Length: 246
Image (cartoon, rainbow, N blue to C red; front, side, top):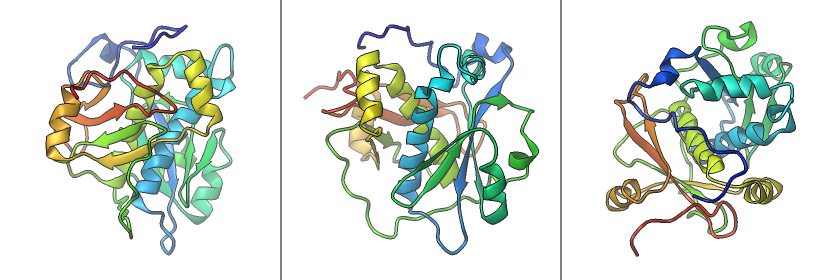
């Protein structure tokens, strides 16, 4: 692990019970702009969700004495949860009035909000749909780029787009925790380049045994507990430690 001025908290991305479960639980809301007639491509939405998580973590309002810093700390002290909902039309416009940050991809738009108590959703977000967020890639996604990290998806899992967006957000957060301040600044100033791709079964076995950061879902929704995403660093930004055999 590279040096970091602030030690990374013990990872909460695993299925076993910990003291984190005794703390008040918070959730990071993400809302995907999803119009019926003009949906984004699935991989575009996944990348944009991951970048949205990084954007709020790096925002000055989330650090030090910033207005969101307390909420971020409370969220990280408990089991880290992310929930992706979808909105269109007037619903999207209402959601955009709440404090948060909208991040855009090639076509996708994702708005991320400061963490809230698990049972404290504002009405503008509480009524938005969670299930049924299904997206496709009209064309095969480009191969992962060499600069930023790759968030590798477990090839054995079938997850909705919303669930997968939350998982790659977890993976991006683990990558962020691995970095020191200089590396974080460089990655942020570059616009958080990253890729999302599905691993082959053979490479997945290598990735999960490599020592790289692994997201292990708690199994609350859609899937059984287990590994979902591995974050592998890029050459130019976010050079995560590599323990994989050549």
